[in-house]
Image 1 (cartoon, helix red, strand yellow):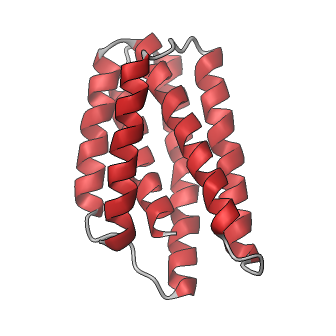
Image 2 (image 1 turned 90 degrees about the horizontal axis):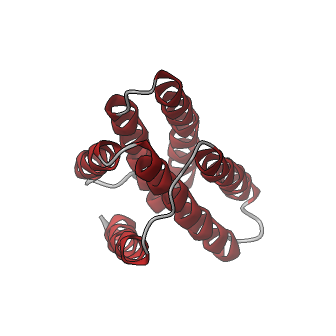
Image 3 (image 1 turned 180 degrees about the vertical axis):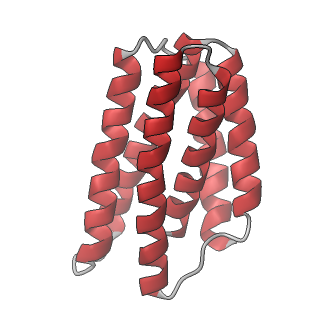
Length: 159
């Protein structure tokens, strides 16, 4: 659950930075609404961490700063690529959450409910980005994102 919490910290930063980067007022509102939904996810994962007697990552400020920087860069590349970054990020998060569901104990219905709802929301965010004009990212960018995600999840699981 700590890894999921870190993901939500990063989602906050990404969406806020992308909202700050777009000149399009309706897209800015869309990013801010997505950030608000991610705030719900952040609260849910924090509640699960508390209930499980676990702590959030000690590196959350670093994760936030890094994700905010990535969000600014994505935003500066223009709205179609920024939306493409959202779509790809959310697809990768959805895959992570799907694999997490497979590893959760069957009896942990509370965690399962949180992860399932987050997965639905992330899939919707990806679909909305595509519907808003997301440009498909090149394969090397997707691969780099997957590699960065693996590094983040490995470190966040432990620290």
